[in-house]
Image 1 (tube, each protein chain N blue to C red):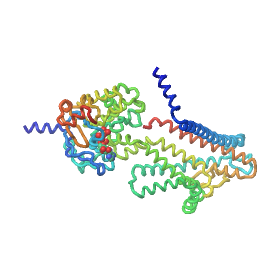
Image 2: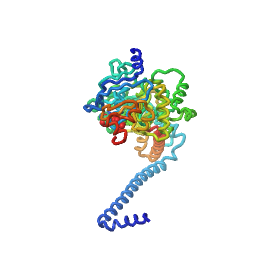
Image 3: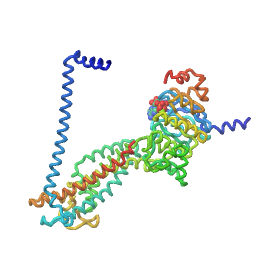
Image 4: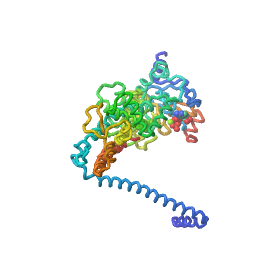
Length: 258
Length: 305
Ligand SMILES: Nc1ncnc2c1ncn2[C@@H]1O[C@H](COP(=O)(O)OP(=O)(O)OP(=O)(O)O)[C@@H](O)[C@H]1O
Ligand SMILES: [Mg+2]
């Protein structure tokens, strides 16, 4: 009995407890709690401005850069409180990767895009191997293997986004946060990224914000519905989409608002 | 069918509308045309004065541009006068001034953009840098005279001159570097931070390289300003008759603009030709530096996000 409890606890890689986020006086996140299991894909959905990005950014302390932002509550990553006094946010960000809404490769070569992160974190292994491995995992290798030293800006939008994912993967993170990674992409590139996410979830835990209901349905194991800073409902994706228990969730999913 | 119908109905509209409205339209069109012509005219005027100026100088000086002109020192006899000392002086000043102003200016810009707290005194410093950039250059000459020449006893040396010019272009370098750093998009910094980089790694590994073309452009333009400056150097007492090349920063010196100024103010006609020839050299130098600035901007343009 106790063994099984331990096991399920072990599987929880991120636990959020009563998280509040304020921008100045304004509260953007109201007492959100959740547990995310290792190796799963969690989709955060909800209408624009409901606080999905804010929530996501508090999971790797990117909100530290917003002067007015204040976070209270606990985020336990492998049992350790990210907002604890002894935690170094820089150290932390090297373990929790992030992919942004707009592809934002560095103005450097494809190769250096991959190696920059590991290098500033003290990586001194074989960079060729690292680049190949990361690009392969991001299924970009075949397209760029002959031009690794070209500028990353020569790539298409979809390729750039996969490069950004490869860049995050190169750090060998446990968790990858993605904030609407497909919103700037065409359907085919979106398809590519979705396939990639399904591919990656065996190795990494992925938390993805998306506005695309179908996408959430296709790729995620669990879905969290946010509304006006509250976590309204969450559960298995299939259950949320077929049989939501809250009226608001149903309205949103069926496209009646949002 | 429907197409012609739509056209007809559109054509019919002005008839229904008052003639006042149509008069307003035609007046706006007229204004548009006039404005276009005016712009054309001003551009033409500017170009023409430039062409006349350059043409005049070329006409005056080109035949005086001989090898000896570059190899000789200045002389009382126009036929034997050259700009060797001035060229050496200008090159010395170019490098010394850059050596002072560029590291200082770029570091100040990095500090102000990346590290300075959002405090009142920082704002005050910022405003005054702007003021300094607009100060007449002769004021810098006076400061140089008081501080470097007299107080530090550098006398009329290259060091004193270069420090003075360095002071002159420092605010311009700071401001243009700040602009270049500001232009680096937030998304780039976020990407770097999200990979677990420390602040200095983000600043020196991403922000600076990304803003380097902009910084370099500003730096080159400021230096070319320093190369063309005369007034502050005259104030600190740079010589116009120099018959040696400086070998250290403590030596006296002259520079191209001073040489030009000196020759142009002589009564003899020949010296005016010499001045024109020296102006051509200075112009070529400045064009060349501006060209490098443009080249750098073009080359790195595609990195703009
Ligand atoms: N830097 C900021 N300063 C002040 N308020 C902010 C800031 N960033 C976001 N907000 C506010 O916090 C709320 C949540 O914003 P957030 O960006 O998290 O929403 P979102 O769910 O990601 O929206 P979208 O789907 O449009 O990206 C919004 O009301 C927004 O106006
Ligand atoms: Mg968002």
